[in-house]
Length: 580
Image (cartoon, rainbow, N blue to C red; front, side):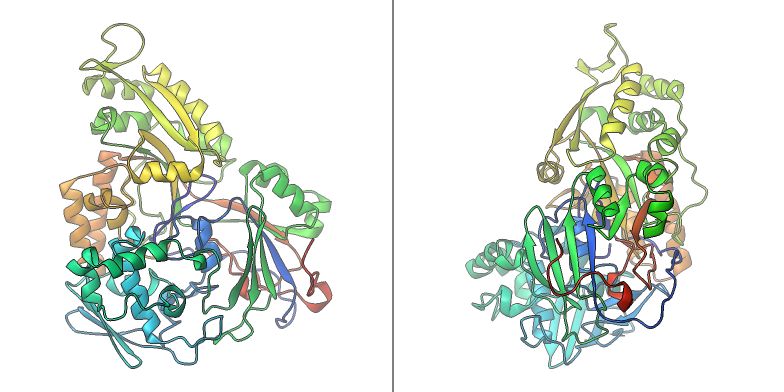
């Protein structure tokens, strides 16, 4: 996944790499050539967890750090061109690599003339440092390391940086250029703790035992720059007023195409009605995610239409219920199938989501070239669900209304986060359906960070989450058995030898058609196993001020690219003084 997985829950979003996007939509009317000036005040529903691209797990952190184009505060080596859906544009390297015939060596030319936001020059040493830092066992970047398991060495010679892989993998080039945003070595390692250690040292025995490497990791995980990033991108960090706002300012010394807006102000408003009130009052310019009821019923009429544009857009992604297969209730696939058949997903979309979304069938997005169009969603069918539970041995043997097996009652706990916008409506539906089927469900609602840690440590029975996906698909991090360990994202402990084999085989297949065949079979297996109940594919509503021009909505998180937005001089609202 691009920028890798970052966790969130229904009101937020996970990050995950995936499929090719749809075509852009809802382009704003042109109003003359772009001009500099004005601010965009954007509402976020929660705060980022951290502003370090190797440590973040929240999608909101990614929205701050990279935006839609891999380049906002920090930058990647390359980005995807959203017009052509191809990885052709160089950022911190000049362009695509020279690739050896055996697909084991990738050689890039480091871009010259780039400076960090503090004025220090960017060099290839920063790239080498970032990859060493990401692979340090003591750095809390395990979800990123899963994408670099085949990387055996990084060598820097002047402006030439060379990546050596241990085996061919069709995703290696993508993982090298669009998984790790590049960090400043002079900021994160001023004492040179990693000096003298090559990349092979970091991934070898020394990485686990050397006290200097361990000390670096501890300092890195707690570095002040994790809240005050220093990047190379078109916008630089200005301040983070906890609980209120994050402010980014235009980087006038940016090496590439400069942004038009002077500032991006991120207002943190957790309450959705309050956020919509702020939008209508002109205190916020953009709500990138409206509640379904807000989109359908509360954002229309002459007053609203005179000030705002409203749009509907898709970000590749899906929401789901995950069943922890370490728990005795969820070990049998027949039980997991039954649980899916107890959830009326179409009614959920129609009544709760006001039609925003479509029933999910698996991990790949319907717009992906690799999506298996033959798979149909399991139906809402309580009768068949009861039969499957009986077949799996979960019956009400003692007549108390709750199914049991081997002396254990089918009673489980649903873990949720208090910032979810879906759970208050979803949980009563689940509780009632499960109760009628002889299953007792309780709920535990906690702070999001508490839930995040519980998922990471597999200390939960079931939970409802969302993965937001990007431009290329490698299921390894979420679905491979090894990702259930060491901080990976296989939270539900799905361990299936055939699935692992196909995931590994797909990584080695450079023929697109043959790789698609592998993924079709893999999706059939996932559909059969039902480790998740795939609720729906993501579709969102948004509203923004009409004064903005050059607005395009992209099917990439967060859906908009503020670096391209501008406001004609006569419509500009903010100047040099802070917004109220």
